Length: 262
Ligand code: E4P
Image (cartoon, rainbow, N blue to C red; front, top):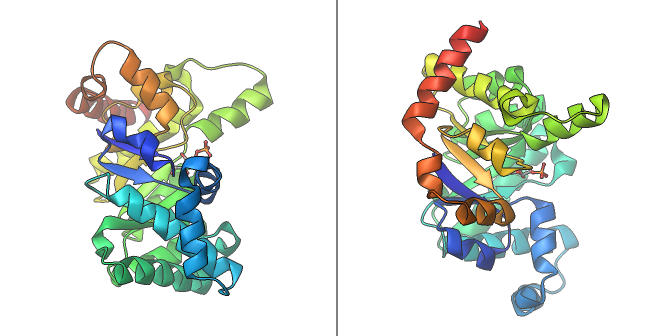
């Protein structure tokens, strides 16, 4: 399992040596408000004074993305504005604009995943972007059919959510779930098992975690994106994170469970 840091706070991820990192607009918003990044934000805004607010926001997303890429050896995910979630052409334009900003700063497009909501319109946009070698991470993914539609469209990576599914069931039923019965965990296992069984190339990255129990229950998934708070809790417990996330055992278990479920 590849460990991915789920944060815009790049200083906070240094300790955990993640391979990749994921951001979203609320994570970046949280980061830009931290005093330690004030000069970076001011410098970016000053350099582009007079540009429309949306363009300045893109500049900040990419500026933070570049800082992250100076720490992680792999890829950073930068998200397209949620207001474009039902607009295929708008999503394509925004993804091209973000990639152009990265490339203008010397970052090769292979190091960036454009994060797009896994709506019908988002999936169609990603299908076209992948044909232009713009790699996509399809997010806000809560269901098996969304996952299969993304894989059929040939997207590089999907982020099936765990915590938000659990949040919904917890609220609806007023009860908690052990990790082995957690509906969010089961959703990711089903998707992962199906992809491996039928040889889909799309990478599966569990996202939106609420506890270390959920993270460990998905050991073996291709990637897991984890907040610095949960990474710290995992580090503080005994065995190294990599060993807890034993890929071989968990992959075999996931495929077996998928067979059993059918
Ligand atoms: C990661 O890609 C997602 O943006 C993130 O994990 C969402 O988590 P949340 O449900 O805590 O917002």
